Image 1 (cartoon, rainbow, N blue to C red):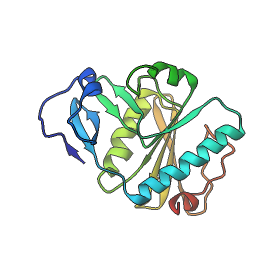
Image 2 (image 1 turned 45 degrees about the vertical axis):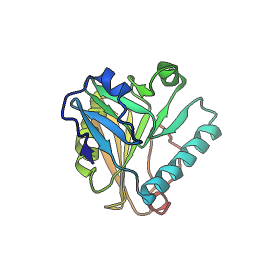
Image 3 (image 1 turned 135 degrees about the vertical axis):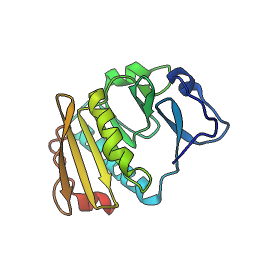
Image 4 (image 1 turned 90 degrees about the vertical axis):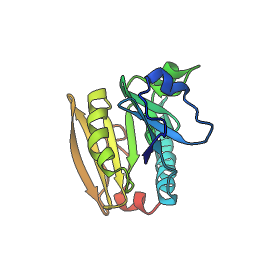
Length: 188
């Protein structure tokens, strides 16, 4: 990951309309544009696997929810906007971005991030603090580097984390009947 070449501070409004003429994607971090590198094959396979399984669970339970990949952002503070790998949102969330940039300013039900070499500290530390303070009820960190999944559940304004490995079934408050193991996710 690298910062955009123009060294200046951007407002959230400037970030929403920023276009450098490329297909690059950026997060807004403390007013700076942070370039997000293209995902690896494994990263994309994990996201696709989870997207399908979450969608199937939403359909099975007849919920009026939606699961979206990285195109939808989340504004966590006045000067921070993230592009999570997956979010789960309600019709209220969809309504809040209808007709404007797809950046939520209300916390989605769930966020999933897949760790890569460049994002370890950001995903485990910075984003955990931001997502908790923002009020995201459930945050998954999929870590193919360490072969584990960390599920963070919001308790007041802090996350209580549970780490799952190997053939352990992942426990989720958002999807309590979901039957996924770490091994299945990481072998996507």
